[in-house]
Length: 258
Image 1 (tube, rainbow, N blue to C red):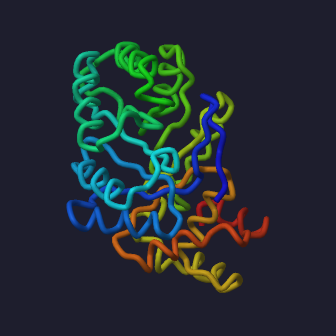
Image 2 (cartoon, one colour):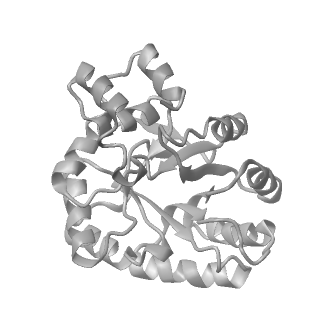
């Protein structure tokens, strides 16, 4: 699987497992199956309430920590310095980990907390070796600019909803010009793309599904992609996006928003 080098110098697998809405035993099972299939990048968050299940799954299969790239997020109501540290401590405890590879602000503050205050806490966690890279999520262009000015550490990614029906090319170009890698969550529009006629037609050219075409469109642009799946067949299907390419004409067609 292809890796992307982050501004921090660390590498992140371009494709990962999103775990939003996965809970308890289902989450444990899916994480175990995903790792067995070759997934090495797992995306979670304090708000998902599944970090304990993820930690248990990884412990049960005795995977080496350095073989897993783990992302978690601090919720937008806990962005004060002390609140960040307290919530992150809970994250590590639930995950049963000593560190995470990537820590994100889940969304901009809804309580007017200065982003600089949040990043001061992130800096402390980074200095302690508990966080390897930092980033943001659901930030607009103006919010990205503010974050860049406020952080002493490089902002490595901006994770946003991104798919062929929600082309964030302007935001992508802005971020990439500043060295920030884009991450796409909900890359399949919560399953709404599976029956899309354009995607299905392109898929027929490659003997792939509409979902695989939608995912390939993202990774072919070097956008980190983290689809969620609740079944092993879909885990396997989603992962099959690397041994083939969309043509320039197909990419252009999808870039227009279909």
